Image (cartoon, rainbow, N blue to C red; front, side, top):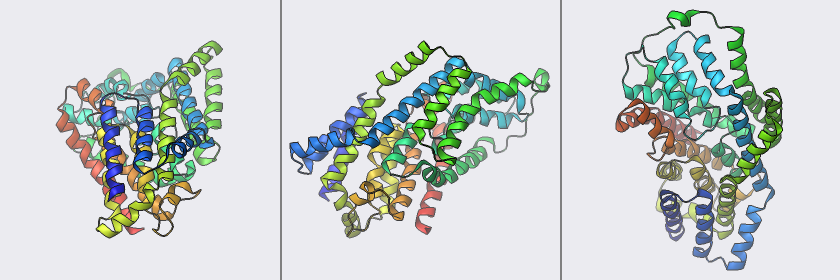
Length: 418
């Protein structure tokens, strides 16, 4: 019981810190110190553990990947590829329902903070001839902005989760891909149920030009290249991102000095603190022995570990509205719950390979954590979308809750039946 209380206190500290606008990385670094002290780690052992975790090869690889993601996004935005891609789509696809869903889905290829605001005006235009409420329009824009977080390896939450769970990206994406499909299908049902087909009209009925297809390719090819290289071909994610960023910059004729500015902005961002804090917390969690006590506690108390795998990531995601928060804080704990008591839970997250039960619980934690993020008032995309369409916040959340319940339910059933 003591270990659980201490972990809950750590979670509460992080939530309060984020509410007070503290950087997540710094909050998790402080949480790591507090966790170590609560579990009786001496100052020397604590400092050594944090330093070893922060400067480990895994940490450097993770930081490099996320920094290059930021550079690639800036290159594409500077070149106008994202805007050109979404504009071309409206001319290529005839069914406006498909356009309304595809526009935010394609914008979702890049992990821009508040990116839903970019697609909101386009979704509004695509749905202007459809009879639907502001809440339904908000749902379509908000929901379809985020399924890519399950499968596209440019999102910090996905990269951090794969790294912390020690799952190769192809393996991780293979496990989460079904939930991408469920998210799209369930979102389409909720968003377009009872909405008749509406084709492009007026001047929009002209055939798409060669320039439209080129604009669409300019936006899709760089990100699809990352997906193919990192997921299908199992090439190191940092290498793939670096090559794609350089080739995209050359193709778009981005000046070298501009690339240097993008790189400098990435290094100066808060991402370094984020990685340091996440890895420090993970290291202390393993060294402190906190994970060793949890499986025995839940077994003796009768609380199903599957319930913990749902509730803990969901709460962290809901309270923070930030995917790296549940990935860095909750997933190592959830994965540890799947380890045999005799073997020790820390081995489940510290070892090279996770036990299958740990993997199953961790993926359930990913789906539940993402559900918490999607329903969180702290999620910037949600508040921006609701404000843009003048919708009722509660009404939009009710719509979002339907496919999220389907996703979490499907993940829970999959975990129980395996």
